[in-house]
Length: 324
Image (cartoon, rainbow, N blue to C red; front, top):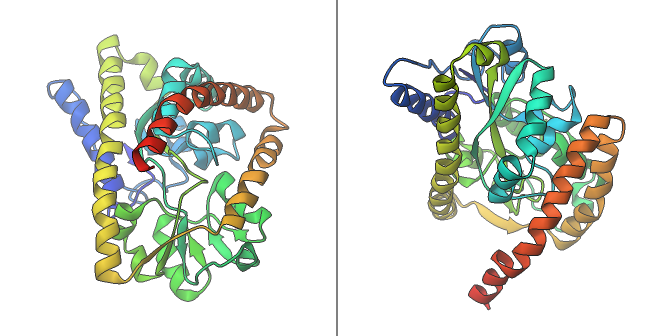
């Protein structure tokens, strides 16, 4: 298994290791999985092609790294102002999302599966504080995929870089801000040593589903038991990872504030409003030239609207009751 995560990024790398251990345990030791971090054999942005070329059997990463191959990949990771973790899993499992993902994966020689979810992410680390949307103008920021396009509409300059480059680019001033994941992962990675202003909420990534890709050639040759083991291991990790991240993020926020002087700050209201206004148009334009991506977008939106109606009587209603 090749991953998009450097080995030193333990929360993410350990997720892949835990998934590998589940596969071995479920198969009673008949299947073993060697996990390689980003750059050890395959670069973070090369794992999809590596599987298609037969250079690896599995990968663990995020599907929005492949949006230049097809915009549809973004919908299987996360969409600005889109579905959160439980909603996205519901779409994949019960709303036709997995069938669309399988159709997309087949084009690129992989069988895709959900293999974890970070939950709502942070909105990024900024070297200087933000007061209004004008403070974003001209900033060079590391924000991937559609999140980067949101910031572009507000005058920032998005740049996609590998995780291994983030800290050096912040120190050199080549980056003014960088989004990575969430307080726990960012603490472990040392982002707080390079910027002190951590913003929330991560409207650009409200529930980031991680992908496990299996070489389609291998998948088609596996027997039913092997396929079931891999699928169940992925489902178990999809359930376990958000729970771990919730607990660890809560602890990390306190540690970053007390021990390292990090300021957790809300995105200014005018930035959030401008992003929410811009997001639908950005996504429409993103899929406009690709028929399949428009199909995925329509399925995603229809399911999100349906869940939104139920959420009004469930999660949203409860949150209002809990904190009123």
